[in-house]
Length: 120
Length: 416
Image 1: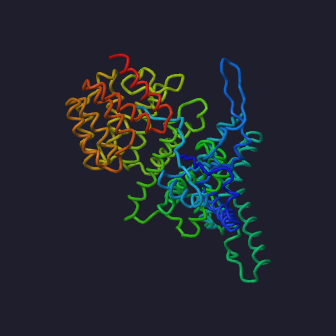
Image 2 (image 1 turned 60 degrees about the horizontal axis):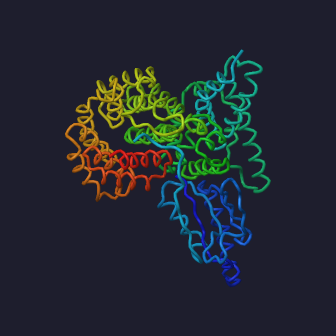
Image 3 (image 1 turned 120 degrees about the horizontal axis):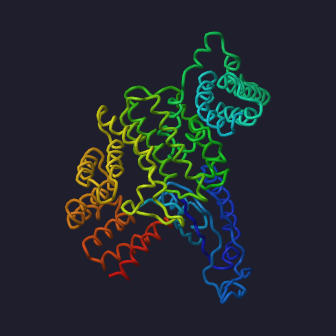
């Protein structure tokens, strides 16, 4: 089963950390991705740029309207994501609990829809 | 002229035999496995052009042995450079076999390899990946595509599994008799998982994924060739064939799922059904009964009905009662409930479902909601049926299942 882990924080949350915490976060994150990369459970993912760099696209009556940013004042933003392929949601949650981002902010574990299915 | 497909079939069949011969001669399962992959690759490139050698198996063993001994020598040299201590590989292991040792190479180690790849010390994901590579002869890239993960992810799983075999020192021989039956269950379970992964996939973009059913059936045939008297081996093969026979009828061109009762049975593969029926009949007559044989027998009853309304539900119910006795689990109870509904009516089936509400293994599972929805619809309680379909649609993680469940809910909303 595949799960996406979504990391949420406030814009500027990383900068707001003390230098010590920032070091803890980077070191632990490196170890985290190494460990689950080697176990064959980490599939891929990325940190995301600050939402001020985003564009939002809406197509109405065939005309695309492009605006800056997702919303004017973001409280919680999607800061990054990664995909896990593991046995079940308990295992995915166990892995996510080892993510240092969960220690400072919050991570959401959500199953990814499969394009396959069985007859009912 | 040899076709590429012909060569590939031959190579896939020989792969485990060649690997077995190497492991027997040199040990080093992990390095042998890499060497065999390289030899297979060399053959896949050379044979279609230059023709298949007279003794293909011998050719592969020679080429793979050469790669392996090169690798062992360079590893030895590396160790000598890095560490003055004596090399771990005894010198006599890295030379050609003495006369008489050759007969060892005639053994077919496919079964031993399967037991090794499906060892309980490995995680299910590792068992599957390693089985497909070491026994199935698939490349890491092919396995990665079939499981929709990047190649490096799959490569990690395979190397992790090989590492684990090395560190736990799992021996390369058939498990001793007292353990063998249980270890065979593990092998069959891995084949079952491979089959299911392929069967749930629709065609089209998921083509590579659906080839897993073909591979599971091929490997199951190999096991049957080696263990012709085991009823569960035959039972699982029958179950796969009878299930796979429905493939052309189970989805619409747009990928939407068609339930068993609404499938065009003319489209079912008649050959697979014939073979599956013969297998399950033979197994039930001779061997001690097991869960795969019973599931195959249930699939056989469905296969024998020319129209959905001809289905012998009484027989299916009896088979589920037996299955629930020898191999109870909530999924069996769920299917059992459907059979109860067809024989005794939906109310009796809903009573049976009640027993599952408190079972942690299935409470909250979309299948429980989906079956309840069907039963409520049968009972004429459309409002409750609709909300159960919707609950199931919210809980499933399969897009085609979700579409199907939402369509059922919508039909009740407009039609009644």
